Image 1 (cartoon, rainbow, N blue to C red):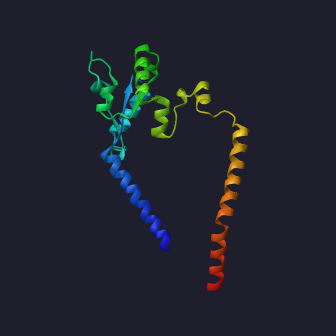
Image 2: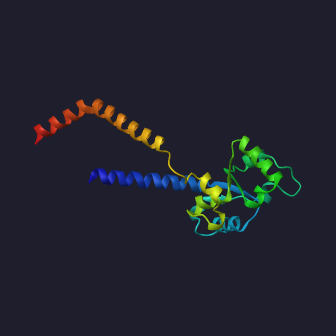
Image 3: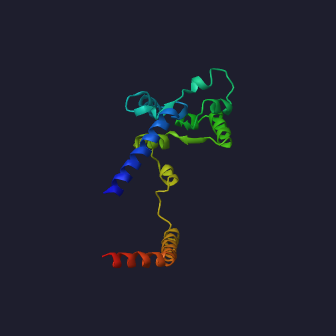
Length: 179
């Protein structure tokens, strides 16, 4: 009972700590381009469902006013974590070039379907294509990787069992003498 209570208090403490940190340092992102899905993401970020403002949308127009040169240093100043590329922006050469610069500067650049899935835990069916499915790895599993992982798990478990055998024998003896 004490162990369960201790674990419960620990979990609640960690969740409260994360909630405080996320309110203080929200997940900041911007969207390059526009689409109906990016509009839905923006509406969500401005709604009350975005409890504690975990996701903070920074409008592209705030970052780069009309005519202002695009520079990823501005993204650093605003503490942007992700640059979300809408389907419109993926078809624009200037936007793709800027996204490549952001990738080189170690920003995470993702498409709107992936970001939509990250926020809402679902993907609009219109955004799912054959190439998207293959990109996400929903194809057949690699049998060699699965077999290697299984044998590695068994091998490491065996080593751990042998290494912990003296401790387990000592615990069994203590239980036997105390009963």
